[in-house]
Length: 416
Image 1 (tube, helix red, strand yellow):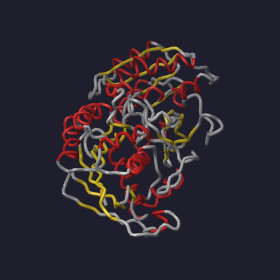
Image 2 (tube, rainbow, N blue to C red):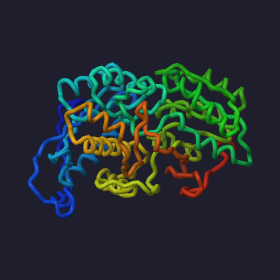
Image 3 (cartoon, rainbow, N blue to C red):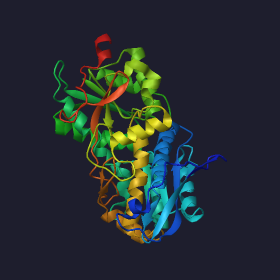
Image 4 (cartoon, one colour):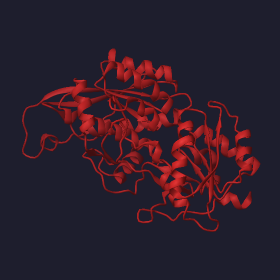
């Protein structure tokens, strides 16, 4: 069951036929069981600058809830719970997000709280989790420096690896390109928590490991579209590659400015793929993107979704379109991890036991294997290089996992 609290709409989703008691409780273990409702509060951006991400996270969250309930619910301790999720719109505002997270714990009495997406919003919620001593998960955030504030005492967790590894494999791959070779790379990012950390530490480390040079590291004012000066300074550095380390709305605007000024090097990397093809069309083909998920990857599984390919099928059946990126799968991943943590804890209403279960957790979903380190991130999650080909994102590195060969150089470079 899912409820939206950004308006007055209430929608109840009914999954397929419920599983038998034997499939829920294990073969040959059919017996009377207490029943309850497990309340999830999902604080997510359904309006504002992150609305396109928020919509896809909501879709993924709802799919996981539907699958759990269709299977008869989830057993925690001696009780079988059906899951109810309520979505609260934080309007892509950090103050609103922190207020809604606190309300979810203190007023709504939620058993599970999915905190917002985006490092700035999650940064505002970490002190709330710490003060209330209530363990919660982020929808989508993984900037190491944000989570490092709770080192040794994490209460807000993310089922993703740190952003410090976001471009590592892409730069490793780029260093192997010929015709032309890649020697120096520039990066452009908003002047916020994500941008400062990436430009000062994470990205230079990736370049050093790949034996590449940093051509330029430019910050532009956050929440504006003043990119011209930063792009001109990048042009003067004559880079072989440019990384646009920004969210979708900024990527679109920056890319269009690059089209106007014909600033395209042989290598182009964008941080997030969501809605890019819708806005830019075939021009984005050839751009690389860090992949947090791809339907071709095999390995981890879970009893509710199954595999990556199964998630893609479920999503298409429900929404009549293909999964375009990792965001919707991540929404399901978060719910499934959280439920497994509660099962490990054996309770739904003891924050200390649940936090201990987070710290000791070793598990997996269709999305990835999961454990949590001392700042609350998942070191077992791997981020792969992807690339736009004919309007779809292919996994292009490493070769043994690739669904297509990497396209090099970026096609618009020849026309610049």
